[in-house]
Image (cartoon, rainbow, N blue to C red; front, side, top):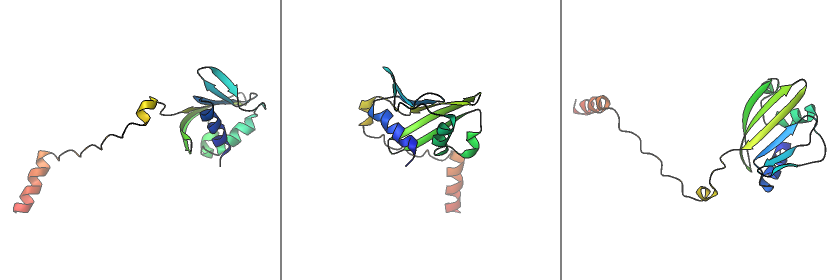
Length: 130
């Protein structure tokens, strides 16, 4: 299991909206009330890169700024990572946090396929009448 999964479980358990990690700061849960550190230990750039390497393709890790998506057992997440002067800052936000009442609503029925255009209907009927 990825280290980030543990962090994201903490985000969920603390009713957070996002995980925030930055060089020189502890990983934190952000929510409407503010931020709460997950650990007391400040993270290094290398530690953040190690966490990201578990969920982001290696070629992306060298980019100055990149977005990514991640799905794990606790949910779907979207992230943004930015580098500057040897530091890295990452925000991973929960996706699809709509109205909780909608979460228990039944799924909509799949849409019916559209009828083929008239030209296709005429062509196919000529083939059968042939």
